[in-house]
Length: 211
Image 1 (cartoon, one colour):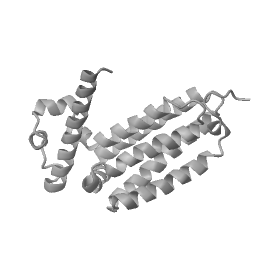
Image 2 (cartoon, rainbow, N blue to C red):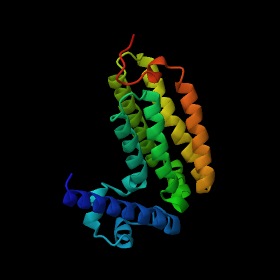
Image 3 (tube, rainbow, N blue to C red):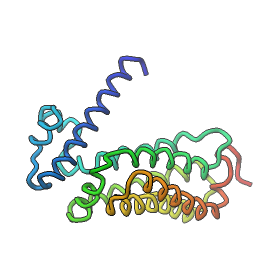
Image 4 (cartoon, rainbow, N blue to C red):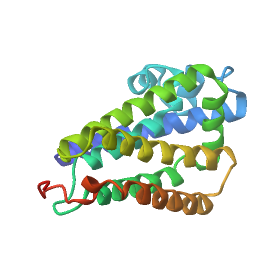
């Protein structure tokens, strides 16, 4: 990636973040139904057509951070470090992503969770996103651990994604501060890691053949 391309990508990320942050702020101040896409665009200092360049609908902007972070987890699993076990890769990727989650949309995290939990349409979208992510991670695990049992791969992906999602929702719903949330997520990572540690294939380095 050359410098010009890198600058464009950073600008796109800043614009996407600005739109998502403005949307959550307005949802908190005015209400979800009362906030229009034109309102969000104006608050983010972009044109409405720019909004649609980043998000297909108002519903999708609620999931901006979720989509970005879940994609990061998948990217990290797709790029393991030589000599590292799948379990170590999962932990490294999850910890990095959770650090970003703790600092993202801090004061509006509870608003985001409330919107999802209170609206059936958003609940359905959230469930679909989680299901898609679990299936993607399951596929990556099976590609990188050819010897892993089918059920082990399904369960490992579900535990990793579901466990982290549950803790993030709990902390944001109850308005936990960043330090408390980070502590909770560290504990959750340990619980997930201990549970996945029983799967032999996840403890063998990616580049080491199965016996």
